[in-house]
Length: 309
Image (cartoon, rainbow, N blue to C red; front, side, top):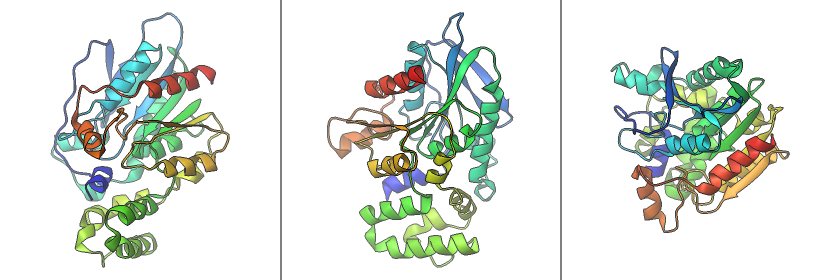
């Protein structure tokens, strides 16, 4: 259940930023969306990558209050060294929590899509940049592929689900808590049909408690395979074979929906983009190792995709 909670968590308090030596421009796109632009110093127009974070109150660096791994910070900095500009931003719930105004009932999945669209539109006609790409990590993959439609020159999914979120969670439960599978499936069906689920097991309260149901319901309205198939621009699908949260089968489902995409499974890479040579304990510890670098192969795959498209 711990991995499931990492996927779905909507509550923690505060977040922090690691300091770096890169030239960074701080930008406020909307009252709820702020982020960092890394722009390599050059007279030429460089490609720009917009990086969208995964689930929970995740900041621009890929961190939460009790989980600091700097995965997205390292991703942006590595791309900078390759001559690729990037903009990464805090999810709106980071700012909402800092204001002490969090009301889970009012948060919808569509809010994250709106933020990604606002960011993309902000940069779409910025003459400092050449082509514009969107990278979506985990939950951000679905957000990003929707925002990229008719707006971006390419889309990159990292550890993105290939099924609707209810099916993803049921599959997770089948491995972690099989005794809850039938009740979860019925509760999701009730939620999809009636907009509410009432007869859920106490063991599933982190998913089905009333305050969070509107968010889950709004998330369930999107099918990643259908959304990905709408993209007319180049697509790169990436997953790590050490990912404990999003199985390679999810990436395979995306690839099936978009067979012309570039598809890469990166050996030893886990969900927070780190290279894992040991067991699941080492894997779990890496979620809170702020100075552990991310996979070098990930950077190579992404930069090669951008250079060739």
